[in-house]
Amino acid sequence: MAIDDGGGDSSGKGGRHNSNALTLRTGSFYTITDDGSAYVLLDRTKRGLEPRERSVDEKTGIEADKGVIYGMDGIGHKVPIRWYYAKDEHDISDVTGHADSIERQYTELRELTCPDD
Picture 1 (tube, rainbow, N blue to C red):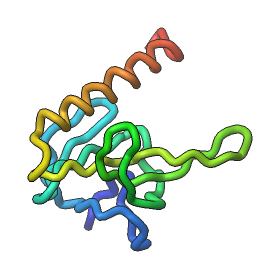
Picture 2: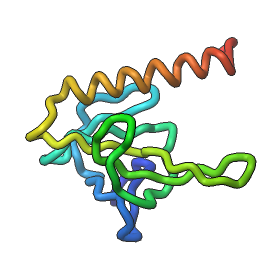
Picture 3: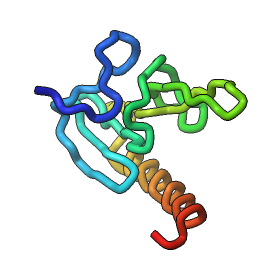
Picture 4: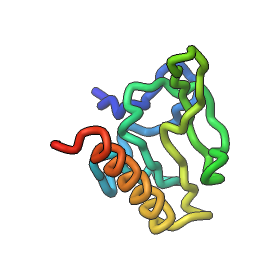
């Protein structure tokens, strides 16, 4: 039985993530896995969000699965769910640097919104 990592997708749209990938590092807000040809960085805050497309993330320049989050105004915003760092172009330090920035961003947000936690 496969474990749902929050981004698995059986619809055939996006979501090439291998649920049998080797977990390399896990933080409060991210998981890094090795799927053989790429290091995969999963934003755990977006677990359960269905991948709708695969394209290059404008902020990082890395191929990413993206989902849609709808704002209060009903407008959909495409957000990256997981990034695929090709091993022939990136080493693990590129991935951990991005993961550390995700961890800092969400930790700061949590401290602002839930100071007693």
